[in-house]
Length: 612
Image (cartoon, rainbow, N blue to C red):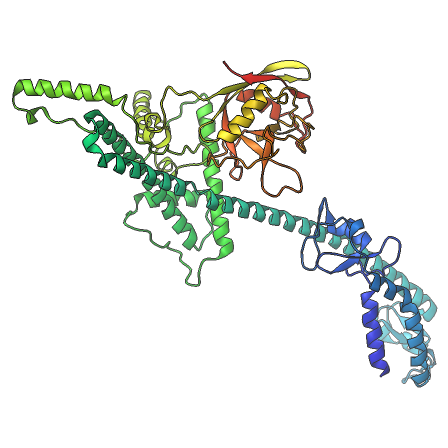
């Protein structure tokens, strides 16, 4: 019974100790605090070990607690147990003494040597054992350090203290290493969360899906338009045929690009080796040279399924390779050295449908009439209505796969004459892939509204920024932005500061209420509103509305604040405009920010309005 009572008391003592520092709780600096996961630690460990910045994670289950350490509940039961444990321990000790039989204390000094019948009065530090005076002179102790018990205890106590000091220092170093490992794992967790958010955003805003839906809508309109062919003029049908031909070539190019991308994804998914840049380059070349009859498994297929860590590593490596290729390409284009664009897949440029042959008419007069009729059709086709095919999505921040494929095979240097001719041919071939098809989307003479912003830095005028607003795809955001630029309602962007800027990334302004990012309502009655779903990619030079920073707002609403982007931001939505002039000024403003994004100079919108 007493043994069980002693074991229970030991368990109670463990409850009164902090599981992080193993020190007892008290009412001052080591108050027991309960986390959201119901684990408890002392307040000192929470502030010094568990709390990193504004984030607090439990060291047992790694669950996050949002409350501040001072606001977390105190574990009063454990605190009361700590205060009353001494009384309980004394009561248990008394009972154990009453029931424990008295034992005769052993005295090692009274023991004698069995060989010489002399007491053990000496201690051999070399053998770490007691000995008598006769044994100390024996040959087996020759050259050993033999000291009396008192001196030996002092030497052993000094050695133990030195060992304890070394262990304490080692534990401190280990604690430092543990914190470094924990910080590293938190960084990895943040990176994984960012990657998870990016992948989820790509799944939600899947550009090929939208392209496919828009293309189907355009083909549906074309089919409906074709069913009304009896009521249409020849020039309308000719324009319809031209648009269909151009759209077919564009879809063919996108199909080829998506097919090669799927081949590379399939190779990454079934690969059993870790890719580097050289292996990716070889893989792209082998994909281009292989038979495109269907997707096949890679040569290193794992029968038990892909390794998730290896799959994630190869995916990240392919993304890094694309970014490396883009940066190298942009550096070559911006430099003074000659640069030849990588060879694209040899896709035929879109061609207009051929007119009826002259010999289909009878006689020379009919041939001349046919030529005149064709010329009339071409002149009338320029005024014919469009069937409204979707605009090809431009991907300045991305990379078409066949660009990487041919860049890994072709040379970047060629004679000047041949190089210019190849560039002209490639630009013609890329026209239906990258360039917007103006006649198929809107009237080329249509102009979007442009607004100007005159910027002052530290009271000195530094230039202006012109922003073109896409009022066709973002009518509500365009109206809000227009009224704030002109100031017709008595509120606006005039006098606003740039309150956040990150070098070569973005700048944020438009908070006319507080100028710190916590204010800035819209011109509408509801104050904040849901942005238009424009599906425009957040690339360099794009302008988007910033989400509300109020803590109670979980709907992603926008107000007056807007962000000018200097590099691709995959997860950013709400793009409604583009910078058409002054992007170099935006870059200069972004360089004035510190590591926290706070500008070191006063950047103010001196005046703004609509450009006439």
